[in-house]
Figure 1 (cartoon, helix red, strand yellow):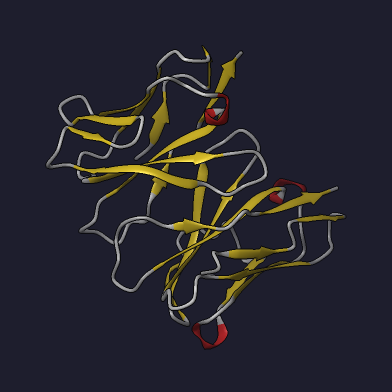
Figure 2 (figure 1 turned 180 degrees about the horizontal axis):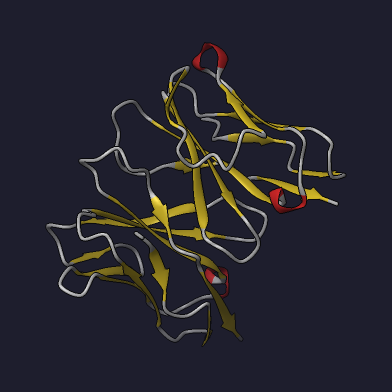
Length: 114
Length: 113
């Protein structure tokens, strides 16, 4: 069974540009999460989808970040326009419906904003 | 505010020795705790979890201890191996609330030959 996959693995962009990160959760997982780790700091929650609905987006830093999960399958996280402080590793995780335990993480998308 | 923190950012141990990684949490309502291991270039991987109705849980070469009185969590790795070198994160959650899994800042474990 395929795990959580993320694309791209690494993106380098200039300040002001746009980047879109993609996450494909484990098939059948209704819960999809985005987290971010800024260099040397903790992994911080961004938002949580249940199927196509945003269950909790309290962690989204500002309106430059837009997450979507059309059809309840894969999700995208767009940063527009990117700022220097957006650099970090963006992790996607998924879990089964109603499951409050282990999250299965992807390998992350490293974003570098110059 | 609520936080989950680690006592030490780095830990170096000799191969074959036991490792102990500590974590403090501040949310007394948290009732579910997980340790994750993150190797370079990979995403966090589940190691072991524990619920608040337990104070100890053992896995293969790993043991998690929970002290709810002082809100402290530890991960013990027996006979540490080079493949154990990674960043270890503790995470906590209040299962009954809408709050998401909250992570600490991580401890870098380095296993010395």
